[in-house]
Amino acid sequence: MVKVFKVGLIGCGHIAETYFRAHKYFNNFKIIKCADINIKAAEKCASLYKIRALSVEDLLNDKEVEIILNLTVPKAHYDVTKKALLHNKHVYTEKPMAINVNDAKKLLQIAKKKNLYIGNAPDTFLGGGNQKSKQLLENNLIGKINLGNIIFAYPGVQSYHPNPEPWFAKKEGGPVIDMGPYYLTALVNLLGPAKQVWGSLMWNKKKRIIGIGPRKGKSIKVLCPTTYLGTIFFKNRTIIRFTLSFDVIAHHRNHIELYGSKGSILVPDPNMFGGSVFTCKKLGGAWKEHKTNKMYLGRINIREKSLRANEAPTNANYRGVGLSEMVYCIQNKKKHRCNGELSFHVLDIIKSIMEAARKRKRINIRSTCKIPKRFTSAEIKKILK
Ligand SMILES: NC(=O)c1ccc[n+]([C@@H]2O[C@H](COP(=O)([O-])OP(=O)(O)OC[C@H]3O[C@@H](n4cnc5c(N)ncnc54)[C@H](O)[C@@H]3O)[C@@H](O)[C@H]2O)c1
Image (cartoon, rainbow, N blue to C red):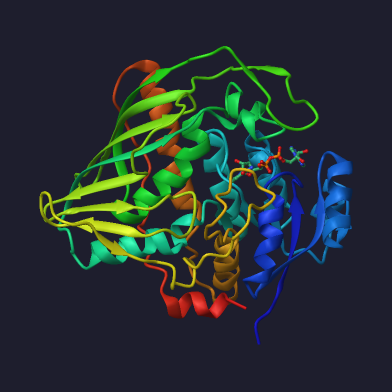
């Protein structure tokens, strides 16, 4: 008999809907209560999903709640996660883990001392696209990966998010903190930990215009660089060039391309769960498609545009699987995949990229982490409804 863990949600904004949707797929957690510093947001969420809205303080003190799901804005992640741990709750937080490495380190220390689980998004690397890529690399299909390219580039979040300020804020804004977690977690899952970075930055416009919602047309200040270009050196000697930008109208490159000693691989969008992987083993040769749409976490589950404006109309989105896998590990006393050490290392790479670009010098990455094991169908089946 699977125990269903009772989850308390803090931060009832844009992304919350995706986690409620996860109830449809996973068998071991249920969001039963919610809270927000904006009580109206909590009440709206509670009435939509037929749960109870509490104050943040009352939710943290609620005896029924075993896990806090922290979906607040990045700059509040540290404070909310810390409070949750100090109230003896396990925590699963949206990305990034915190907005600076020292805060994230403190969270790891508190969780360790209190013997509590701390988990973090992104969990997209558990999806069919990244797991199929991992399987092909482990089977040595294209040999040792030597080089690669990643790109996330678009005009910015302001056109589709009603509250885009955090994406352009001084400390937690910019494309590396925002999209880096998806790309870097996917890369660490495939290549292992990173050891050094360097890069350059661009600060394009000083203002952006909100394109949606009640504040449509309002101008907001851009308080951070909006483009980063550079290089990541991995411990396994792979060198990856990256482009992360909120200043590109359109491009036609692949999200992640890795070049190995025996061939090349195109890894699908690390912000989503599905998509086909492509490999090519000869110059000018055909690209072989490796479909993921029959895999548990690669199957298309979104056929129409969802409430999230940036979600592709046809896609696989199983956000929440990281929380479910963590719950399974709590029950079975195992190490979870979306663990604190992995997200800490990813945050360390993010902050090092930003520092390297700002100081115009190479920065050594101080942290490391274990490479998560492949998420097998047998394991996924155990947490599916
Ligand atoms: N929006 C997306 O598509 C998306 C996708 C993936 C991940 N995320 C991540 O999810 C998190 C939330 O993003 P969002 O788009 O839902 O933001 P949002 O601004 O829509 O919602 C955040 C909510 O948190 C509340 N909040 C802020 N500080 C708080 C605090 N100290 N205590 C309690 N509540 C607090 C706000 O009032 C707001 O209701 C971010 O970390 C973001 O990086 C967002």
